[in-house]
Each structure stands twice: as structure tokens, then as C-alpha cells.
Length: 397
Image (cartoon, rainbow, N blue to C red; front, top):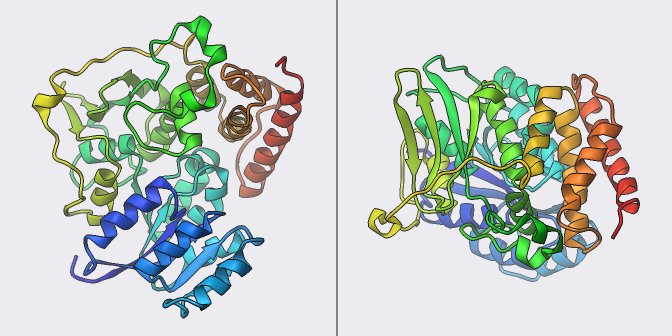
């Protein structure tokens, strides 16, 4: 790790982006920030520009870019090149002096720049699970054809990757690994009476007991849709069948996932719930360096509990298994419908329990067809969003 590597952080102002910059700042001889991007949070992006002095800054929201440009121009980092719009994300993700791309834009918006980075042969640090869920084999094929390196950042997938055999590469099938045990915290409503779930508020849903995450991801954790998306992603990353992915609720969030081997050995990756750990692992790969995370105090943990998920409590998990078994565009439909339903819930338009209702009805309304081109995937994404918005209007409040 002697050569300084250039890094582009897509979604720099989100929780993953902030954690990445924290880790990178600890190793200035190893990483140089080339590009930072944000959608609307230009105040945070400006502060990051002052601290890390990237060559490029991207403001996706074109209404905010002029004010941001003037602010940069009047600052001590006036030489930063300012770009705007969604296409600029792909531009900075494929710059010649970018070695690694942290793909941390939440939702479908992260697909095209993440895919562009893969096609350009970059080391893609994938924190955006939706990009892989949507594009599936197309994304993995791009990685193979370009020679890109794909390293998972989600704590669970990073844990699985760490527990795989030596020299394992994502996308390979390991005959030694029999099963993946994908852990989940169970979120804030793991023990809430089912009758009380329709009345839970957005504020309650985003109050995750263990992890500090954005609102959308926190709601996905509460419904366990995040675990459904992670199951689909794990099938692609580790070339396994859905039946080989067992979801295990582990409320303490100390074991981040496990791999069950054919000889009966089960390897687990453990650590405090701090995203700087998987970020540092991917940034230092195949070596390791300091992340800033607190060491795990196993005596403080004291005990670890495990339980099977209840599909009555977490219907989104059932829908994710149905989507991957249906194949084709259905994982794309699942993801798009979820994004619309979660946004509606956060805006107070629908009840918490309506999230799964919207997704299931959308999946039933759209026929399965092969997801063999990017155009088909993007069309299915837009169709599912339109159908979901229509379904919102038909729900009883």
C-alpha cells in the first residue's frame, strides 16, 4: 500500500461518506480525495471541501450549484472544479486518477455511477445495495469484463467476504462454503405487539437501537426490507442460491454475519456496530489499518441472542424472497416500490404497515420479464415507481 490512491466518494455527505472521510483522513499517505459528491446538502459538502480539498465537487441538484460555486470561489479552495447534475457522478467516478470509488448514494440514484465505475475497471467499494439488486447479473458481468475489484461495504456483506476462503473474489462460487448466516438486528419493532405496528411513527422507525444510519435505511431496517435486499445482494456477490442464505436475528449486532463450511466449521466476523470497520477493511484490502473504531469489549457484550425472523412481523422479507425467486425485473420492481412506499411513510402519507402492502400490490401488478439490458431495468424501475404512486392514492388512511 505504498502508492497513494485517488478516491471518489459518491454520496459524501451521508453517513457512509462521512465515515469514509474519517477513515481516509487517518491515512493521508495512502489516500487522496479526488472527488466528493452530494445531492442537496451543500453546506456539509462545502465544509468537506475545506477540510479535504478534492479536485472535483459535484452538486447533483442543479438549482443549488450556482450558490455553491460562488461560495467555493470566495473560499481558500477556489481551485476546486464544480460540476452539477446526475451525469457528473459518472464523470467523476471514471476519472483517470481515481483508483477507488465509494458508492454510497442511497437508492436507485446510485446505480448508473456505480455501474460506470465498474465498467471503468475501478475498485468499487459498494455501500449501495440497491444498485446491485436492480442490475444483478449486468453489474457482476461489468466487474468481470473490466477487471474491476468489487468490495462490499455493508457490514454484513463485508463480514461474509472476510469469512470466505483466502484469495476469494466477489462473484465466485466457493464449493467450500455451504451456507451464509446473514445477521439482522431486528430493528426497533422486534418485540412490538403486531397490533401496535400500524400506529408507529416515522420518528420511532428511524430510531435504530444499534446503528447510526440515514432515514430511508433506518426504515428499511425496521421493516427488514434491508435484509431482504441484502439477501438478494448476497446471492449475487457470493454466487449462492436464496436457499443457502439464512437470515438470523441477532439483537446485539456484534456478529455481523457468518459463513457455514462443508466440514461443519462456522466462521463469524465480530466487532462493534461502527461502519468505519468495514470501510477500513475495504480501503486497506488485502491488508488492514486503523479505523478509529473502539475495540470490542466482549465482557461488556456478555451475551448474544439469535432468533428466526417472523414473516408475519416482517412481510417485506417474504416479498424479497418472492422477488428473487421470480427473477427477471422483479428485484428491480421490489426495490422501486419500496423506495416510493418508504418515502410516503416518512412524509406521513401512509401507515408503517402499508409499506409492505404497496410493495406486494406493485409486484402483482407488473408481469415478470427478463432483465437482460440496462434499458429494461431502468424502464422497470420507472414503471414500478409510477404504479406504486397510483397505489398510494388507493390506500385507506
